Amino acid sequence: MKKKQHIQPVLEIKNLNKSFGNNHVLKGFNLKLYEGENLVIMGKSGSGKSVMIKCLVGLMAADSGSIKIHDYEIASLGRKELDVLRTEIGFLFQGSALYDSMTVRENLEFPLRRHVDEFKKDKDTDVLVKEALENVGLANAIDLMPSELSGGMQRRVALARALILKPKIILYDEPTTGLDPITAKEIIQLMRTIQKQYKTSSLIITHDVDCARVISNRMILLVDGTNYVEGTFDELSKSKDPQVQAFFKN
Image (cartoon, rainbow, N blue to C red; front, side, top):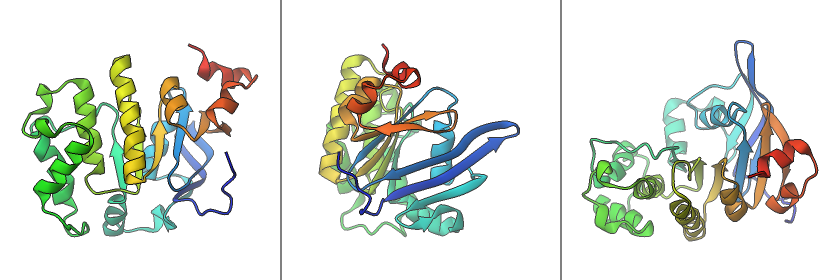
């Protein structure tokens, strides 16, 4: 893969540190996400992946370091400014995180209502909801409840919700966790289709080696709160380093 040093990243994390008492979770973590690429982050449980994501979206304050999205420093933004910037970011939560008491339609309408002032609608809400569901192959599920959907269908609805505001960046937190192998492959292929259709830049946190192999342009292995190694899937999978090899063993 060609180096992109001359291209401005859409997302950049520099020297991010976060501790909880004596537990140093992030220790100078760095990351650059470029326009139109899929960057996979892999790390063992407790390596700092979830904390990094929470700092990234402003749900948790880092102890030190810098997080920039489209050149905006997250820590310097007020609440309203941060809410506006969040419309540029879609988030597919681990386990889908749909609202059980809402229909599929209402789940997708929720972010539109929340960001009605910031989101410049050129179509009415119903058209936007139907369009998002069509793009994930679930137009017929619009009036169903989440409990009436399979795990794979719930993940598709969650992805449609993440896309409803036409974000430039999508964060995927363990997108294939809890799915059977066939459904997981379908979700991975859908992620690839969405990336091409919406021209998104994607940050994907996963333990799924098959997902990383199919979806990634680059990978970062997170070990003990810092970047242990970075490269393409082929480069890392051929590494002789025992720490790296451990990620690719079945």
